[in-house]
Image 1: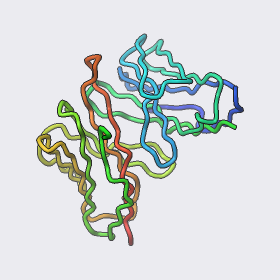
Image 2 (image 1 turned 90 degrees about the vertical axis):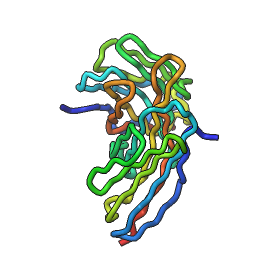
Image 3 (image 1 turned 45 degrees about the horizontal axis):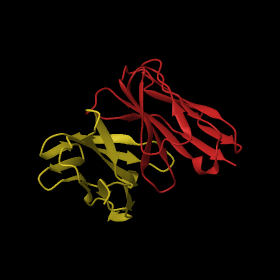
Image 4 (image 1 turned 90 degrees about the horizontal axis):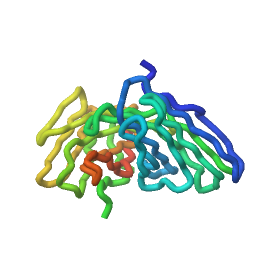
Length: 112
Length: 114
């Protein structure tokens, strides 16, 4: 099992560009999450999904979009990148609503 | 008031001593609790989960949960320099859509001094 896989690991974007951060899990988990973590700060929830076809906003969704067409994949789309989106992005998944979450390796994004 | 509070540290502990990390939470409906370790530049990794009041031990780690007082703690015995990291407390609380949300503390930075 690969667990949770995120691509790319690093990316530099120019202001106004768009990109998709990929996240895939092979554990058949129902719940998937996108977080961002700014230096020295905690995790902030961007979007989450409780199953294929179902997504919902977290606490910081502005500037992002997600989709969940399959159980395995949960891509995060950044439209019109802004410097405020410079951060480390983590994807996580868990099997049930009260079990532990497993994280991908993270994507370090810089917007210049 | 934050939903999950941790002392940001840094907490400095001599090698071989016991490190004690604390976390308080505000929602009494919270059901499950997790401790994660995060090394600098890496992703969080699960150390312990605890669901019931009392202590849960796993090797050098002990998680303690007191739902009445709304706190959860992590003890690390025989601390090693490799334990130096930021420790994140996560609390699973009910959300309005009948699911549960993981609420994260900001983390406590632990430094083990040789």
